[in-house]
Length: 231
Image (cartoon, rainbow, N blue to C red; front, side):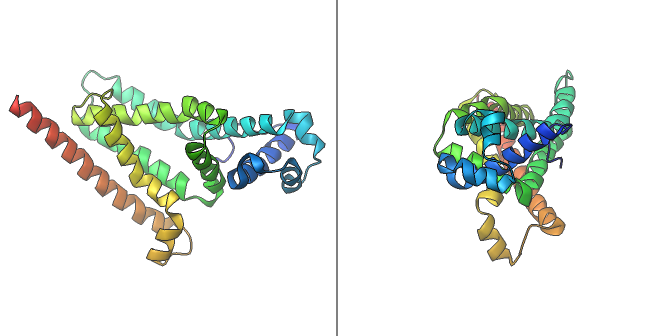
């Protein structure tokens, strides 16, 4: 997992990146109530650097949202590229589509169980519950394209229309299989007796989610088949 969407090549970029990292941590914890003084202190920068590089706290907030969008896009580019190549075939192989769904979800599990992405999750969770203009940025650049991408894969595998509301809802519920391990992080750590998500526990989670996804895909495919037979 690459924690920087773009390479840092100058002192100015390093300072900006440090400020954004600190901002995401503070905004994730306190939202726009976070202070520029605390952000600058966490970044080890002078408070004037925020004005110099970003103009205002609100612009720093939007820059943080853009960084998150770029980070997620960067990490999922290889999967999306491979999926487009497979889906562009005249008759894509169903097992390949199924594997694409699995690899997308497994990649999300790796991202969402990593300690270094916890602040990103807090930031996005706040935006989901109390959206600001930053949510529109993240939604348009990352969430909507990825949600549409996965819905397309589910639709192609099950024979359902990816534009149908039911398919969108089923895909969203499928994503819930993954998100539960981030949003319910403390619960599963305590219930499973884990202190953190290490390589072994992440594999166990991936195996469980994989089996649940198969149940969902098989059930949706069967429903589609039964509906066709009844016509």
